[in-house]
Image 1 (cartoon, one colour):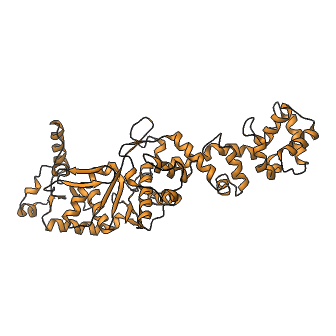
Image 2 (tube, one colour; image 1 turned 90 degrees about the vertical axis):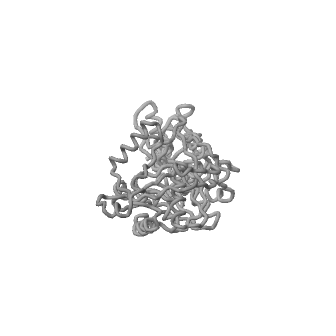
Image 3 (cartoon, rainbow, N blue to C red; image 1 turned 90 degrees about the horizontal axis):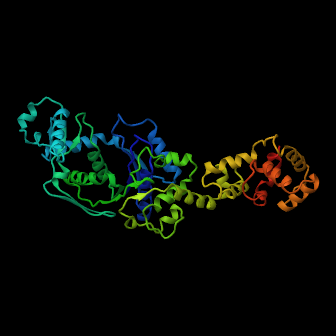
Length: 432
């Protein structure tokens, strides 16, 4: 089983979406279940409705989970597992106050050393623990040997016991920490492969250590995806608008194109433009580069334009308020001038909006408007053009400038002969 484990504390960013896409594809390739697990244990940071928003985005990208779980529902299991570790003396109660721990960190920083827990409470006797009435956290004893694992993207990884340390698994309010809850949940759900961002690479040995101490011996593979850099070569953050999936959708990028681009990013693919279903035929985690990938918005625009060419025209028209193949084809005529729905929408709206009734070409536009209202229906633009020229006496720029303004609301754009087949059924509405 594979899982996507978002946190309902922030908007979904492209790194999250890439993780979800890769987990979904590999689950389908392996014919295993794909689940979504909302990591909502941090109640103070959860944003109301954010979980629903994340699920809606997954549906929009056709990433349909076999089930959805909430981490907070496993609280009792997390607590029982912590008690088990305490009883087996694999974990210990830590009474150190936040102030005492901060003093230890400051001392380590002053000595230019990595902070490690001092081990003070691990040495307490049973009597001292029972006599202590202060609130306590639960710490898992650090491993006695290095923790090693093979990463499918980054290769062999090895972490010394000191790097893992005796870390907290239960807070003083008896809620689990991220690494403990995640490790236990992966056990509960029988996860076989964890695909996630490399910002979680240092979490992995801790989670392996938790499962080892709980006696879980089923194999679990890992693949940590490299970070995504912005166009300046720095790690993408919330300050980068393009990092937000919501922003990309609002800018008019198609879900199919965004998915295509994220699969393409830092990957060796047999072709550049593809659907997720096509990618399932050849996708291979081992071909993902271990180096950071740079996000290129212009490249995404190119990919989006190609998908707009490929998409069913009637379906494309819905994004513009229609359900008509002709309007979808009309949109595609403007793909040399725009690459997203947002960029092309004003051009389509201009065609169907009221045209200015003043200006240099006012008189000619009025002549043409009346001629069109009384003209027969012509199949080709040449026939249509000839009829209008004959009935109005207009020619040259005195014909072509005003007819373009009347039909498109713009002095420039695709050839009218290319547009006419898709607007001829709407002429009365266009020139009203």
